[in-house]
Image 1 (tube, rainbow, N blue to C red):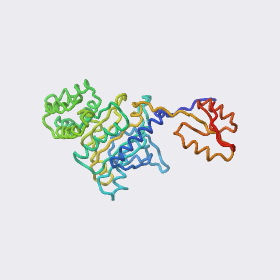
Image 2 (image 1 turned 120 degrees about the vertical axis):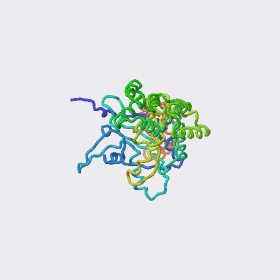
Image 3 (image 1 turned 90 degrees about the horizontal axis):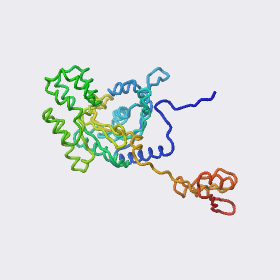
Image 4 (image 1 turned 30 degrees about the vertical axis):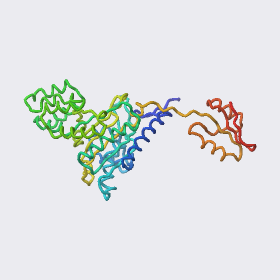
Length: 389
C-alpha cells in the first residue's frame, strides 16, 4: 500500500532559500549580540517538566510537548529558553560575578491549538542580562532590541514599551478577586473591548475604572503617557517609562519606539518594563521580552534580570529574499586529479562550482547542460581545459 509520509502537525521542511534566509538572520543577530559583550550558552532540547513548574513560567502545560523517560519522570521539549538559562546562571555560573550577558541561538518547541496552522518548532535568538537592575540595564536591553532588528535588515519596524507594574497598580485599586483580575488581564491583552466593558461595568465607582477601561487603547507615541496620567494620576511606572524614552530618544532610537500600556501578557512573570517588536509584513510580534527579576531566585541565586527573544523565521519571512548563487562550472577529474579538482572548486565563490560525479567527460557535459552551467573544467593527465556546453 502506497501512502505519503508527512511531517507532524506544526512542523515542516525548509528548503534552499528558507535555510539561507534563516542563517542570514541568525548570523546577523548573533554577531550583534557578541559585539555588545554577550557570550553564547546552549541548553538541552529536553528538560525536566519540574524546571518550568519551579520557575513559575506562565506557559500553560498543554502548550508543552511532553516525554516520559525510562524512570517515569515527565520531561518536555524545551518550550522556552529563559528558564533553562536562568538555571545555568544560578548553578553552573554561580561563581562568576554579575552581571552576566548571555545569548542563545536555539529552537523552542510548543504545542499550538490543533489545526490552527502554527509552528511547533520556533527558531529563536535572544539575550539574557542577568544580575543588572535599574534604568541603565533597561536602556541597554531596549536599545539592543532595536539594533538587533536593524542588523537583520528590517526596513520598517518598531518596538512597543509597557510596564507590568502599571496594570498591577491599577488592578490593586479595584477590589477584585484574583480570578476576575486574571480575566481582566486576558481581555486587555487580547484588546477585547466589548467584553472588557461588560466586566468592568460593576466597578464604575472604583478609582481605576476609567484607566482600566481605556488601557487596551493606550498605545501610540509618547503622548500616551500623558493620557495615562490624566486617567490614573501620576505613577512611578509612567515616570520611569518617560525617563527611558528621554534617554533613548536622545540616543537616536525615538523613531523606532512606541508605547502600549495594554502590554499585560504573562503579568505575574514580568516585574518591570515589557516590550514587543513588530516588523512590517509579520502578522504578530517577532520580538518579545522584558524584566523578570524573580526567576533566577527559583534556582537558588537571587538576581534581577531582563532579556528578549526574536522569532528568526518570522523576521526572515519579512526580508527581501537572498538570491542564491548560480552554478557556473562543473569540475570533471580523472585519476590522480582529485586534489587539483577540489582546489579549483574551493577557489571559486560558494555555489558557483561543484565536482562532477560522472566517469566520462561526455556525461559531465550533459550534467552541466542540465544544471544550466556554462561549461566543464576538466582535469586530466594532459592538464586542465574548460569545455563549454
